[in-house]
Image 1 (cartoon, one colour):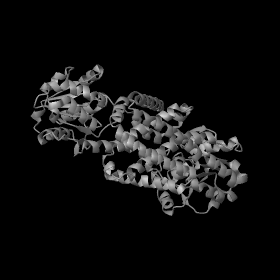
Image 2: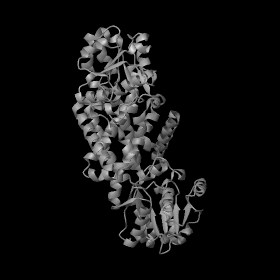
Image 3: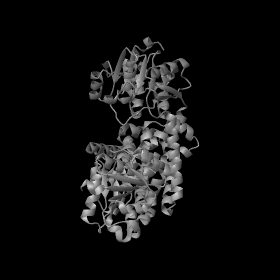
Image 4: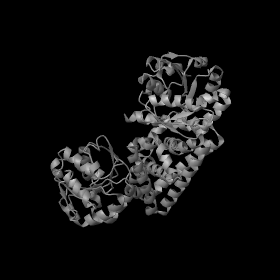
Length: 291
Length: 291
């Protein structure tokens, strides 16, 4: 994609994901003009001051001028955004999103973008953080990170290439998956861990002696629960949107815990060690591959 | 405690915990001679080479010369160590341990140290890491970390003070608890999270498409599962030793997950968000206090 193609980029939701996309494109010298829209005027104001966006706007009709539109709001608001932009999309504008679930976003696109759905390439950058808001945005957030695209059968390869090119300018590595496959994979390695982490902190907080417990919580607890400091509304939307796959992984986890419970009840040290050793080896192998 | 009181320190199990204790005392100029004993000759050899210990030994009778003995083996081996040192302990030697569970260690001490139990002050430094072995030991591991002592009624204050002083030389902050209280607290904030983390990695590893899942696991997964790279044998011992309290916390967690599951099944977004928001607020408040 020639950089000139990105004269105007419109971003809905200028938080960590949307803001980092804007900064990444700017750092690559690839976006002449970035326009931001969002529910929270203070956040948009900050995005302007930080130079993450060049213009603030609250009229979705602005997409008529855009080469590329990124919808980076929580998934729960994407329907409203799509409905608002659909009447204004020109034939040359490509739309993508940064949502953590894909089947629901695809369904929304068909329902709300209607005849323009072919211009929408669903995407998911694998680069969250427990920090949210534009202040956490960084030009290098996507460097060497995966971005999964789950293109629609209606997307032309040219349209897909434009979205790929934009993410590549941000330093990302692109992958392609089916929406259902995407949702199953991330239910297991991302959505379930978030649920489990929130659930543990909630259990400690609700404990009769929760205050004392937190006093003795240390480094292991801190890392295990880092993702429980994630944006609650965003994760509510993700878990609800992908609940079928999340429930399946949760059921698997409940079976795993039932097995662990039985080993503990029987005092089966060897059985417990087998699970721990298998997990440790699998994680260490994974870490090694990551390097 | 005068430094001269620590002419000779004997450490059983020169791994992360024992090795860091040795290095911390040495950095404070407080231990003239540190003697290490352990099951793994290669590890003891490395401890010598790294200067963590001054002498290697495999005769437990060496405790006769010690001012202070630290038992820093996995909890499962502490009984054997106590049985081996009991006949050799002089009246002036103080013994402590670094075990993550305390009721079982206290029971062992009464059973195996017998008449010398009054010289044993149970302890637990809250400073683990997923790395183990002497190569991971650091002089500053205990700096600003909590060390919980759960003294026996038979301990004299003078004996307790000697153990406190040694940990303080390593930079630690001392707390005192009852053994049962200690085990309940750490079941909730440490032992259960380790179990949960191992269980999640094991679930992913056992998944029919586990290989693909690991490919897309990212930063959230990495932190959530950091403690699943912990020493399997040590954590097996901890979970088995403290299984009564761990089972109680696990049952509470299973109830929490059942609640989450019901919310997901009903598509109750508000109910889910309530849990996420409560957890996030509790964690962020805790983080703030830590700083």
